[in-house]
Each structure stands twice: as structure tokens, then as C-alpha cells.
Length: 177
Image 1: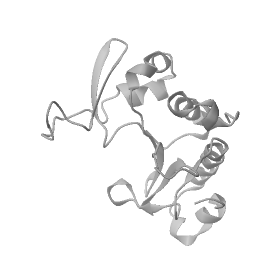
Image 2: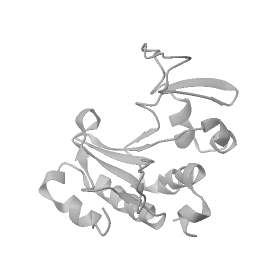
Image 3: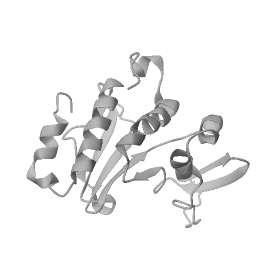
Image 4: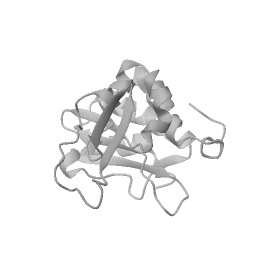
């Protein structure tokens, strides 16, 4: 969805349930993502089903094969920023040295793998296994890396984490804010 206006989208009555702080965060996050070449796809939002009333889905603009690195879930009780990561061990040093609010999404109990039985040919394809501070973590990729009630003051940290996993000189276009 190129050429969209996130402010105008959030002013639509269907988004009245999103509080002012949530809207301010979404607008700032969206601007930063656009600077990186990532934006909302197609209509810009989808019904959230189990994630909330709806969600904003970010992907690389101008690319056919869509990789989704970020979603914002719009819920009655606030918003949640979810980032999608793979190969976490490659970024261990960064995570080890991150502020608590960043590190916690990797080390907290939320999303711990419950070994639900989707095991196939050598393991579950939805399990993320990685090591942080010498501890091995097994997380379910269906419910991890969520920042509940993301704080505008921490936006720089969220974006730095995003850049750690997704940035390349080609992706950033020289911009990091």
C-alpha cells in the first residue's frame, strides 16, 4: 500500500478504540519504517482474529515476495508491536547487551514452547531455539517477540533491534531514524 496516509487511516471511525498514545506510536513507527523502505501492504490493515480487532502488517515495499518483519496488533486494551526474527543466535551479542525491555522479549516466559505435538521429521518447524546469557530458550514462533503497549520513548530501541535483524545498506537507504 504505497502512498497511504497513516494519520488519515487512524482517523477513520473503525479505529476509534485505539487510544491517543497508541496512535502517536503507530504514526512514529510507520514513519520510521517508511524511511527504511518498509510499509503497509495492500489495504494496510487486516482483521486481527485472535490477535486483536485488527493488525497493521509491514513488509518491504516494491518487492513481490513479501516477508513480514513487523505487525502492530490493535486491541481493545491497547496495541502490541510484534517483530519477527530468525537466526537469533547470530544476534546474541546484540541481545545480550540490550536494555531489559528489549532483552525480555527473548528471555521472558511469554511464548515458551509447550511442545504441542506438531513435531515432524526432526522437530517442530515453529520452534525458535537460541541461547542468551548461556541459557537455552525454546519459543513458539506463533507468540513471541511482542512488545505490549510499546512506549514512544523506547521507539529508538525497537528500531535498533529491527535494524540489527533486517538492515542492510540497501534496505536502509542510509537512514536509521
